[in-house]
Image (cartoon, rainbow, N blue to C red; front, top):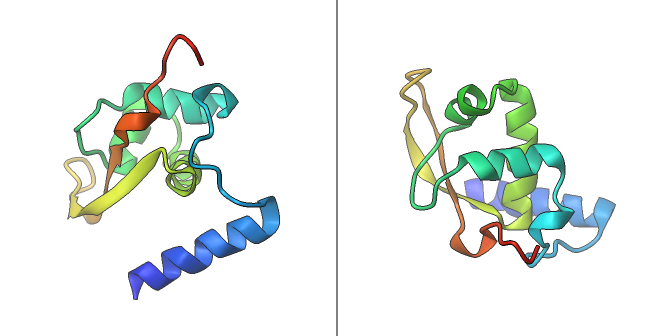
Length: 105
């Protein structure tokens, strides 16, 4: 059931803003999106609450930007785990390897 929700969300996003470009360069991301990605190490799992604490942004702001980054293919949801901060079971996030900042971007 969860997959269907994600698919419908993606389709709604594309209806409003056009097709999602998975090759969107780092330089075209918003400053908040860049800040989140810059705090994320490769091969490390994060929760939205952890990203909120690390970046100093509100959790609601992080949630919106993370959802955009997931839709753009910059971050993937890799499962669920207990958040070390909130102690709740939440989605676990990971930065995708091919979306690393380079000097060319």
